[in-house]
Amino acid sequence: MLKKITISCLAVSSLGIVTKNVEAKTKLQPNVIFIYADDLGRGMLSYEGQKIVKTPNIDQLAKTGMQFSNAYGCMLCAPARASLLTGYHDCHRDKWIITNAGIYKKISTGELTPTQVEAKLDSALSREPKLDTYLPQVFKRAGYYTAEIGKLEWGFAASHKQMKEHGWDYYFGYLDHVRCHGYYPPFLFENQNLVSIPGNTRVDCGKTFEPESEQSYKDRWDMTGKAVYSQDIFLEKILSVIRSHKNKPFFLFHPTQLPHGPVSIPQIAPEFAHNDSLTSIEKEYASMVKKLDDHVGVIVNELKKQGLYENTIIIFSADNGHEIYYPQKGRCEKPYRNMVTGELFNNITDKFYSELGGDVFNGNDGMAGLKRSNWDGAVKVPLIVSWPGKIQAKKSTSLVAMYDWVNTFADLLRVSVGTPNDGKSFLSNLIDKSRTDSTVNQYVVYSSYMGPALVTADGWKLRTFVNKNIFQLYYLPEDYREENELSQKYPEKVESLKKILMNECSGDFRNGVCTE
Image 1: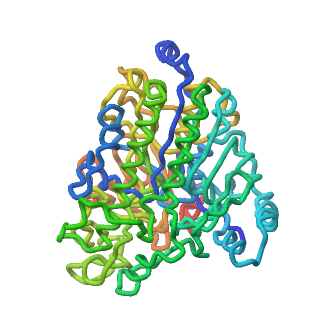
Image 2: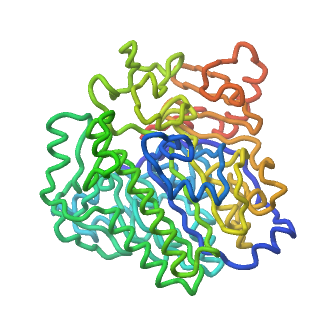
């Protein structure tokens, strides 16, 4: 019932050594708030060029913090979270187990009690290897209070025992991925306690379905049993943690549902209501992104109100690249197809681009591909790191991965990660102004539904289509859109990168093929 997920790869490294200059600037323990958007392509942010949706609060973080233009996540949410929290890439066989989703729905249907659900998950998870360090444990070792609020932080279903073992002092939210697809849950969890949400009565948490149709529109706006929007609950919990722990350093992780679909929003934002170039579901999706930006603004304002802003690191990022939740016949369709030719994308010679696939938002920022693939549009993510007066307001082209965060925070807080993992600290790039674009990773790797891919610090990319025994080569500095395939021109480069990638995939490229 539990499946191991295949995983992508990065060079194993030891903990980075902090320079004296960095040490002198990090004697204080800053609070850390990590806002982790769900399926948010970086093209949806106005500081990255989004024209329809304005994101002024996220833009302000980018203006005052460091923007990374070469940051890689994963191609899917569950491995992305596991990778972030462990410091390992997602092409290993033996670092974690990804649980199946849906078990927590059985509480609503009366099939299982919360205790029974917990027992079943713990039994299955007992086979999961115990790692030396999870991200919240880094902060615990430095004396921090740790809190996770929002979408589940692990796998497709998480247990209380697992959350405590990972190092959370407090958590509030969903523990099941299937339930996260609805924004009106009848219950959530606060630590081990089931918390009923009055007025939310839908077993499916108010989830609707794609593609757009007269019936799906009707279902979305039927508010029966949908009284309280989950993201609004999360915001109140976040503010409560900030207020109640302002005298002790805290690490607050907020994996928001927004803007993961199916599309769901209590009301369309006024700025989109009369935009005749958008369909109704596109207006609703834009409003989800707008709500995410609004909440970022509320969190920043609360930090300022509590006198914590100057000593708080705020990170804004996302798990994977863009995904489309507003498909409509003849406009933008799933399965994704070329709206000019009518043919499905083959992901070899023909791949998704916004103008071909009909994405009015250009959510993948002009890159090729969407979530689940190994094109850059699936794995390049927005990354902003803000710490007023400590982190330079600048753009960085340094190659970084989300699994670098465990080591980076361990470096900041001067704690050990134990057994070396796949990540590398990029603290010096953040703090030392002379090293903003210095090399952190020689390469990063990641999995996909097609196969693993590798990107080097100097811009070479090898992508695979394992089932078809295809290896394609691109040079990203001159080919942002991955249009010019170079394997025939540079066969030696292909072979050298294949060796690295094979090693990172433990001798089998199939370890980089996601089967979930």
